[in-house]
Length: 224
Image (cartoon, rainbow, N blue to C red; front, side, top):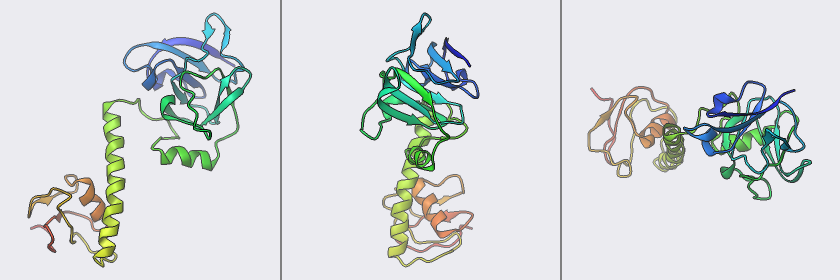
């Protein structure tokens, strides 16, 4: 069993089979900060020098195969927040069933049972990668998550639009699109990688491979 505090940054500071608590968001960001690393439960994060990590953690990485339970007070007491394998998870973005945040408020931890499907589903729905770890949070990752949310939102609009137009299954690369919201120019063609989220979602709904052309309010054929 191991418990130690190091200076480090990034999710890579947490070895496989361990969990890590970071004193700054985004795994301490671009500068080294304190990291508590452990592979066991801890009744108290104050164990004398150099282990004193009470009310310090703002980010968590869990590379164990079990649920990491975070507690507000020593002795596994107070508010509890279960965290599945994966991360990093910024604690300011997480709340428990009582809508309580444990950001800068974790004083003890327990390695519990393997995560339930309910817990995994909750974190997946919130956009977290709960298995295999998630790359360190940063501008690029933030933009990727934003694009995923936009595309998911666009898919819902396109599905409703397709149903309203009476579009049925598989229509190849052609379709009818109301392109005003897409801000597409009349007659502009897009390849597989050049479409925006609405066009990608529309094409996926139709099930058609290849390119498509967006024409405002008109039906179009495959680009020549």
